[in-house]
Image (cartoon, rainbow, N blue to C red; front, side, top):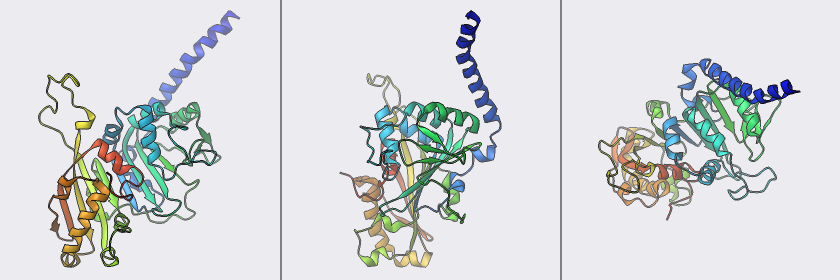
Length: 340
């Protein structure tokens, strides 16, 4: 009997050791071209809006958030989230296990999300995480986490939300609001191919149907302009000097998350250069409307010059905080209108 109790006490230790071994072994098998690739390559549908963040940016904009704020933010990324019983889920009656999420984010190298069906009763979304993900250790973590149910195809279904996790693969994870992939695979275009070099930015958002920015706010003639895409791309701005005086009692000289800004550029891609020149006055009007839709009441951004470079209008010098990026990324942030 004594020997039996000794074995029982050793089981947790063996379980932890096994978990570590599985994690290390799994990471060693992850192809580098997968974990460091472009998330859009794993989407199942062409999105109306595609957002891509580096792993560091994803961690940066969620760092310091308490459980409720992190749960609310992650829930806001899902179109019309509903609880298992069919009622609308809210942070008051359902929260995400944020300790599991934080560990998950630590392993992410890049994140991509596509949204479609905007303006309909049932918008759809899918998200791709690329990074140091081992299928074996992830399945083990999902089993321990308890709010996911294993499916026959090797994937998982959330017990809280209409979310489905495709069968985990080495180096990448696919989440979707749909139970299964499309019956026939079609070529997916997440952003214009000529803008691929910008997709590796810390923050990259491609609005592939620009008319959704101006729905219900512009005359028919203005909304009919042949715009191809509205793009946001940028990198974390690294200050050359400390942002907070060392004498500050509130932060003891440390740079806080709210002071970390991203230097962003906006591009309005038009069909061709001749069309871009012909519609210059109208595009300027659209730019003014887009500022309110995307950035809220930021008069400093609205005053930035809009320059024409070939068939692309460019606005440079936009500075965004992590909190502003979170608002933009939240469902409807670019389509629900200006904030007060």
